[in-house]
Length: 132
Image (cartoon, rainbow, N blue to C red; front, side):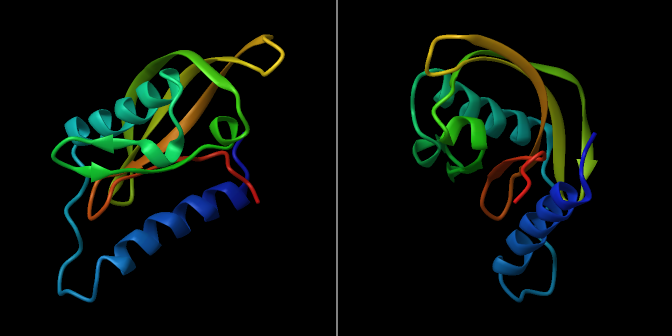
């Protein structure tokens, strides 16, 4: 179950990315499914290969801002699987992803989470369940 705080936070991130794009007369283009999947897979592959969120870059797109508390806290990603179809959210798309994780003591865990992917003007991958 998603909290209103998490939904509000994700909406704020997406709104901020639009505002930071500048004061032009039009909004940035909607994120395409192909672009979103490429950005999301690049982020998750980087995690699975042992990289940090700050190191994620997509060729021809550029650096990706990644917000994931499990990754930042040191959990290892063993595997992942995108589940179902993307759902639109503002100018981005959201994806359910099944994660297979391992904690620092080596214990395995699995969970399904939701990522919101914004492709333009600068790519962002944010876990929707972040609550501060």
